[in-house]
Image 1 (cartoon, rainbow, N blue to C red):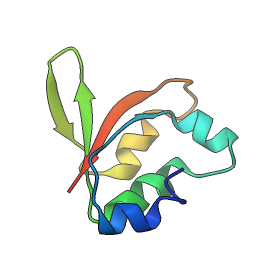
Image 2: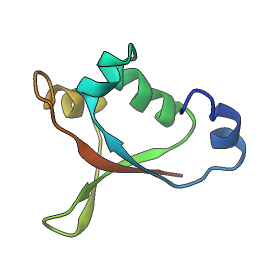
Image 3: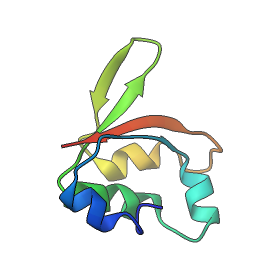
Length: 82
């Protein structure tokens, strides 16, 4: 979906709330790291929605963040905003 929204993301800069599930992204033939990097390239800041603490946590290192999901069938809710 993000690939098809490239022009909208670059021109309109909507705030995006999405479920980040790396294993599912890989199963669809895409790369979770490339997805997050693409959003960064469009000028987005990536934030984890920490439900337990009711706060937003910035993702500073995409590779480190993504590596915490390796081998797990889990997800994290994220916000991407400019």
